[in-house]
Image (cartoon, rainbow over all chains, first blue to last red):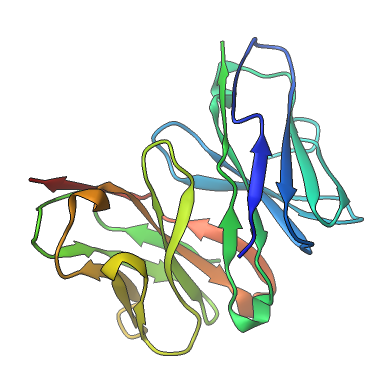
Length: 117
Length: 115
């Protein structure tokens, strides 16, 4: 399994500001994913990030609001831009653990709890 | 498109009694199915997964699930609930055959275990 860390673990931000969340994996992985979990809700995929290419965003999420970087095979960042209270959520990064075709699954980081005032 | 429906938002059981958390899926392709658990203020943990091998899947902490293609179901069960099982449980689907590796989460079932 992969060990994933995220920074910060939590933050309180003012509306209109931006926050960059970091995701670090202890092994090289092809694909990384960013999810959002709004209060009391399930997880929703924001985007998929491949190293060396532009992230692929899901419907309802745009690059200007959630720019993502993937500079190497062990690291990614998600920025939440021009924040509003509606962005208050837990943001989670996840990775494939190994051979996807062999049925390996995804592992999740501990999440970043964001509160926007 | 794939989707997952968790039929109960809340389930309450007494300690020592069986647990049943229901999940139905919709998928155009052969799905991979998972159950994840999220304890309060903790990260997501994989309980078990089905990826086209045995239809009865055993996971951690005594949980198991049975893939029933005819019923498009993947219900999670445990013979005897423990207080530590109280958490949020997510049924999750993925369509490996399409190459789409992202996961689609159900809405979650909150399990309460009464002493």
